[in-house]
Amino acid sequence: MELQMLELYHGSPAANSLKALLPLKEKGVEYVSHYMNLLEFEQHEPWFVKINPNGQVPVLVHDGRSITESTVINEYVDESFPGVPLRPADAYGRAQMRIWTKFVDEYFCPALSFLGWHAMIRTAVKHLTPEEFEARIARIPLKEQRDKWRESAAQVWTDGQLEDWRRRVRTSIARMEEGLRGPWMLGEQFTLADVSLFSMLIRMPQYYAEIVNDRDSPRVIEWYGRMMNRPAVKETLAIQPPAGAERPRRSTGR
Amino acid sequence: MELQMLELYHGSPAANSLKALLPLKEKGVEYVSHYMNLLEFEQHEPWFVKINPNGQVPVLVHDGRSITESTVINEYVDESFPGVPLRPADAYGRAQMRIWTKFVDEYFCPALSFLGWHAMIRTAVKHLTPEEFEARIARIPLKEQRDKWRESAAQVWTDGQLEDWRRRVRTSIARMEEGLRGPWMLGEQFTLADVSLFSMLIRMPQYYAEIVNDRDSPRVIEWYGRMMNRPAVKETLAIQPPAGAERPRRSTGR
Image (cartoon, rainbow over all chains, first blue to last red):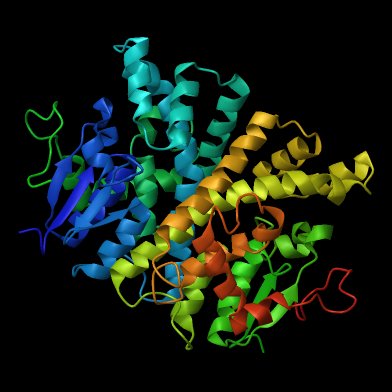
């Protein structure tokens, strides 16, 4: 029964989970959703670490074979399924697209996720005893992530370090503002570059209004409005956790 | 005259420059070489920053259009030119390849280049006065790079931080050792995954013999030996700077 089956393990439609969810809607590809409870760190549970040893979502499972990394997943989905192409037809266009998706992965996303994590960690762990906190950390597969947890929970970062991460976010938006080539990032075609950037931008007009606004980034704001009007974006943002999903859900047969 | 022309701006055949040089040899693609003097930081000179605003090599210029980022360049070259394919024919194989090339870019290369830079900075700048050093820094386009220069020159890093970077290098080699699927990283086919990893590994059996050696990483050592026997690898490693290249060379017509 697993053959010919497409499954996506993902969190709420934001950041890297949104990045992997949106192309499936844009292309009209059917899949089985495994909505993970990231606030309860379900991605670090042993059953999921068997699926992705890094303990991270999203993960695509196609005919029983796993693919990790949202950016890699998206090129795979575009190459493997019919529907509207989300990559330019020419090699130069694809290269330009990949420079953007790489920029998101290596520069924009780390800055944003650092700041988001820094703001969120106290809320996320405040109901845990120190022993529970250590137990949660102990099962995180990647040392870099364990370190980030500990350092963020201890709030060791200086104002200067936090400001440097904010500077990177500002630089990312400035680069977008300058780089927009048309209605979409690369011009007339909606591509995975738009998907990657939007997945990061999604909450920024609200939470980073001092950076993303009509005055400082008017073209980004217009692009954001066009994104929000896309039917596939509306459908993807409306994805809700399944009823009773507060407890970890295991997929059938795993 | 620039049409139908392929040019590569690169440094010596190591790290990211090696990564972009090797596929051109493997595929037998002719190109005009612009061998940059990275030890004199030619990549930060104004004429080159016009070609790549980030002031980084390698840069491929094809028919007058620039492509940056060695990993992006390599997929472009494989898509654009005849010769032996350096990417798997199937989408799943390409996804596996991209997970490796992404791992190199986001994890392995930053660790290795941090340590290399830390070891090299004093030699690279010892002939400069403080004023000359500041002038060199002032023309570096990316703030992250300016910070890295200043911090490395001041040798601010603690032993603990340096050890953490070495741990990442060890982790990278351990992951390779475990991940090797055949004679090449993905199995029978030589791909851009091998190219990316080899570009990082090139000097490691010599300079990181405590990590890359027969006992701890026997499969990596065997793979390294196979790599060194490839004719295209031998030709690429033999690339020498042009005579009299101590002075910056401008390409004709730029």
